[in-house]
Length: 375
Ligand SMILES: *Cc1c(COP(=O)(O)O)cnc(C)c1O
Image (cartoon, rainbow, N blue to C red; front, side):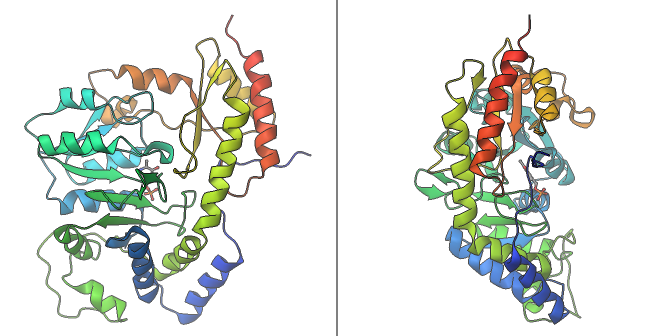
């Protein structure tokens, strides 16, 4: 029986289990000293203030709201992203304006230019697969049009752009620590920003809008005489989650090296195949969250997916473009996004895979493309 391969997976070990038991023994699952320490460690990692929240979607929503963006406002965002980016925008009351992507799967600034309106308040670039968006271009564009930049960095924990970690240079940068991301806290996320107004707004909004509750909770207290002046949400992180996240952050070097090494093997084995387009990411600098390939026009992608599955290889599709979903349907098409969507598939990638798994998967792909040519 072949080993059961998984597309992605939470990769945790004894240290995470011990950390969870330690918190359980203390009998406090709320936002307390573990979250405080996780935030301190993340702030050190990014060299910038970081706040933890319940998940990456909440991080995006709170970031948008903290920037004063909401009902009647528009945010430019690439359609080729997880539905979380879009839902976070509508949760704030704002409207996502779906933009096309370039061939590197990052937002197409020329298309964004065409879609800008008086209502546009922000642009949300997505660092797809961990590969940094073209930030220089994006920040120049944002400056010119007076827009905030809210980076969806859910895929890009640890990736570097021009020598600096994603998060260090950005305006407001949001990460996810869900089960399969580059590091996990079970569920979780964080917002990184050096804008004090953003940080202090989110400190309140993640705790139902209660003023200054963060400091109290870190001391194991609550605020019994609260004041609330704005909408808040119950979006704080639990100590149980932070304890897992802290171990993952401590072991990040291993997790990062493993992802990079596996991606490099895929590139070595697949990049010369005439029917497959691999990416050109620099895996010494970026930490891949997913590994996506495109098949050439003559390959029936869905047939290839079925062939791989028959051989025990699960694949993914990241993502069905949001403008093709009923809730976010647009009256315009996005040519490049739709073309890319018809030709991509995501291959297994997570730190528990071994080099030999990547060799096996690549071999089956090479066999598969020859069997899946459209006649
Ligand atoms: C995972 C993800 C999110 C949301 O993070 P959650 O922690 O799952 O809420 C947002 N955007 C993208 C692109 C993601 O992949």
